[in-house]
Every structure is written in C-alpha cells, then in structure tokens.
Image (cartoon, rainbow over all chains, first blue to last red; front, top):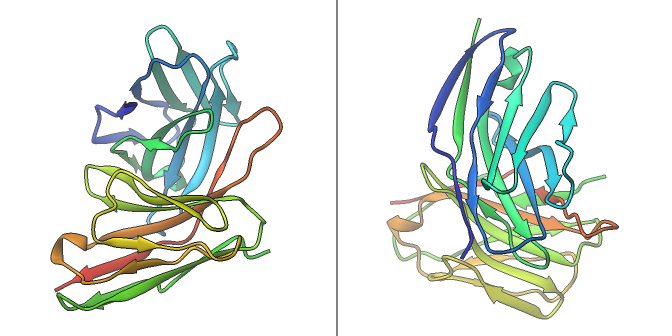
Length: 113
Length: 115
C-alpha cells in the first residue's frame, strides 16, 4: 500500500522569509499525482499545488513551488515571501490513476511577524 | 455555486446514539468519499463511491455505513457512536480532468464529539 510521510510535525518561518515543507512517499507505480493541500484554522481544505509524476518540470503557483524528485520519491513544498495568511496545516497527498487519495499526517506551519 | 455541502458543522453525541452526516455536491461528480481527520494521522478514508449505487470501504470503515442512491448525495451513518469516533469528518468529491489529473473538492467538515 502506498504511504505518505511528512517528517516535520511543526515548522515556523519569519514573515517574508522562505520555508520548505518535506514530503516523501512510497509507491511501486510509475504514473501518479502528488498534491499539497492547505488547511487554515477555518478547517477548509484548499488545494495549493499539484504535480503529475510524468512531468519533469516542477509545478509552481505564485509563491508556492515544489521540488519533485521522482527517483527519491520526494515532493517538498517551498513557500516564498511567507505571509501571515500562510499559517495553516499542510497536507501532502498522493494518488495513482484510478485509486484513492492517500494523505500524510500533516505539518503545522506558523508564520512569525 | 455551492460545491460540496456538508452538515452539520458541529455535533455532540452520547455513546450508543446514532446519527447521519449529510453530504451533497452539485458538480455532477462521480466520485465521493468520506474521511476522518485525527491529530498526527492526517486524513484517513472511511468509505467511498465511484457512482450511484456503488460504494466501497476505505482504510477505516468499521462503525460507519454509507449509501449512494443519487449522484448528488452521499450520507455517512454512525449506527452506535463510540468515543473513538470523536473526530473531524470531511466529505469530498472529484471529477476526472482531461489527462487524468483529479482534484478533490472538500466540504467544510464536521466536528463530532462522542461522550
């Protein structure tokens, strides 16, 4: 079974600085998708960014970018110019074609003013 | 433009009581699912459905029942609540984009406490 690991239960970053959240996964599939979801205190789950495994180019969405290392099965999220509104729980998720999502345990990010 | 509507937002039950968490989506998604979120464990899949009349178990199905009589609705039933079912519950749905990349759309969650 596929598993997703987030080894940092908590992280903090100074406002305007850059932070990287780690995610590793275990799979024997070659074709799959990876996601980062944000959960602010409102509890709403918000898709931040996603990556298709067949694409070598790392996905970017404004201040959010990923470092996808397929051979290492690593999928880290970099947040640049951190803002107070970035404070949230971040979940890494994996899904292979036609299968259910598998979520990691989450990383709680604090942004310090 | 409602998306995924999940009710109630909060619920307190006594051990042994039953209740139904409601979930409805207006996006004509075939896939719907229920997750529970517990500290340090992320989101774990309870049950899912790939279409009306079709349901299947996820990672943690014990103590929960589901049905899918229509495309829009996917209720989750707790038949006899236990303190171990204290959790935050999320309903989610998805469609299949061109190329196979699927996004999950989440409801706003239900905080359930079982005393």
